[in-house]
Amino acid sequence: MPSLPDSLDRVLAHLLGEDGWRTDEATRRAHGEDDSRQWAMPDAVAFPGDAIQVAAIVRACREHRVAIVARGAGTGTTGAAVPFAGGVVVSLARMNRILDIRAADRCVVVEPGVLNGDLQQALMPHGLFWPPDPSSAAMCSVGGNLATNAGGPRAVKYGASRDNVLGLVAVTGTGDIIRCGGAYTKDATGYDLTHLIVGSEGTLALIVEATLKLTPRPRAQAGLRALYRDAAAAAAAVSRVMAQPTVPAMLEFMDRSAIALLRHNGSDVPEAGAMLLIEADGDEDTLPFALQALALAAEGEGLLSLDVAADGIARDRLWAARKALSPALRTIRPGKINEDVVVPVSRIPQLVAGMEALAAECALPIVVFGHAGNGNLHVNLMYDDQDADETARARGALPKVFALVLALEGTLSGEHGIGVAKRDFMAQAFDAATLAAMRAVKAALDPDGILNPGKVLPG
Image (cartoon, rainbow, N blue to C red):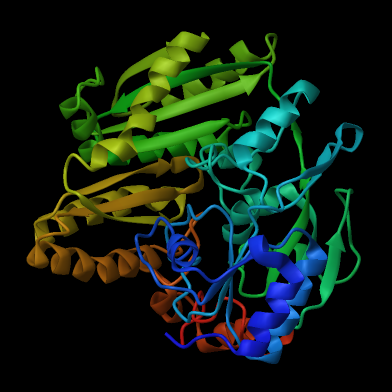
């Protein structure tokens, strides 16, 4: 790995101090991976304390053509935070202040290192919350959520990160600080740079401040568990649920293999071909009517049973099965390829059937579950990562997953992003003219290509 230019080392050491500029092996190694289980060694790790320092880091690295990889909490799954080109990892973990809770404006101004879970706790006394709720909410950062456009189960009603941000302050690849959006929900002024930068995985700019849209916390919640004969019956129910006026707060799907896994691990879920978990929220007066509307929509051909959980303990028991799924996957095989693909809701049966056929073809377990209301399903290819043959079969199956998703008019990612894991499939998802437009945007904001090089766009 080539070392940094001496002059860059001196400039950034002076700017950030001994504690903010680290080149020791232990720190570099600790910041060379994310939850994709991929790893590469950066040349240095910077810990800026404010936007001015971030801009100075970018300008210094640009002068020497040194790569920069922005890093939040490292919970991403696509390798987007892995420094494959070496260079400098800019950890935003120390920029973790909640700057201004503006309850009257239903927004909050934060630095990117604030953890999602900490933000929710701080908002609770105000009766507000920030809707994005990825499974790693307790440990993932808001900056990381914005970089990948993270979502979660609540996205079906409240939207993903992009739908819940009002404005940004960001540092482009030229080291310029730009400001876009603000504490308002309506804006027809110029280009929408806010929502362009959100989801760009640190390839266009480094987010150093965000104004987030907040939502009043519902006073009451209740849940439903619906079991169906097969995935087609469950998908038809999803279509009915989403076609009527009451929008569910959550609408989760599990296929036959996911249910079998839960039963194998001791859950009391009955045997079925598919399952939906549906949640309603609101206040004490309106919730019963919302729950009734969702239950009526869930009924139909192929329904085996429908259970209601109206109190907190019952709801927790209902959702325990969903929360137990990801950890339980490792009991099948130690290796996992988890793809967060999206298809139109009406195409869910074809996707599930295709995954069942692919599982038989490659002789590996494939478990499908996820956010059915958005058509955003997690396809989990399970394999023994110590078995070369199984590993090869799992990797060989991945292009077939994406080919089916695209054939069903879907897309590669709903909330994890592209990183390097799905980068080479972007040319299948977009035509040449569209990719050229994306590259033009990249060149405008990062003319020297130093921000997270090699990610998102194919070579």
